[in-house]
Length: 377
Image (cartoon, rainbow, N blue to C red):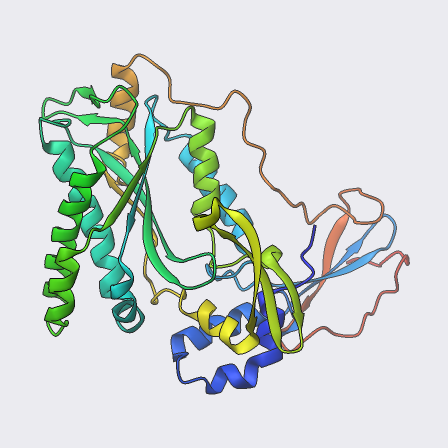
């Protein structure tokens, strides 16, 4: 079901203000412009016609931007399908590393450094516990996904990670985590190590960082949250589907756009996830959305250790062979959210063909009338 309101519509309504806004930089402006033009005549498209019943349809091109609420469905499904073939026959854990709010201002001005440090030190923390024989004594791995937003579109940088419940020893043998599937590593100890590693790394990457803030952050408890192991492979994929290609806010969460305000739904996790609504001025809504536009070329989904792109071609077959199990597969293949452009919306036959390419200047007048059988070359 199509949403009634879209981020693109809010952008179009406030675009002159967006272009002049002092807190929206040129890269964010370029990204927002792509989202505003997505699937409109501004990006061009093509005219299709049905050779059976004569129905015509104009389809405009997508922006394919990773921040676009309308462009992530197919990318998400394609990515998940590839990960399904890489599932190990072991328990997986969900670990979340969160940066304290005191670093938000630095994240706004130097996002690449702040977020890079988050990836690096989260992996270093898991790696340290993995190598420690008291906890595992083996090389583990992780898939990490960066989210920068909270439910109210505020800045809330955190890393969602899925981690296999074990690792490979120096001898190349699989070793299961000692927790027997209940937990991976102690979160309090992980929080302290993560805090120390992150603050040390950010001081290296940002030499002029405020020393008073760093000292205060050393005294603060940081949040590392570890959920219980996933129960089965389907749960891992469902998790990946929710988090991998998510954007700051989906179009379906926007409840109303009127009188210059945008109302949207959110979950208040301080009240057990109770569903509430809030309203923001349109330009404030856009400003908050723009905070979550990542730097150009920044990779937000990363693989490490035995799950890295260079290792998994060897490690996954080795581990599955050692455990004498075939790679984890779902009992029923995952059904992709597919769209077949050849299917006619009227007669439902696969008889739609492209008869004209529409340039970016906008759609031409229809040369073929509805329900009139087209003449095709």
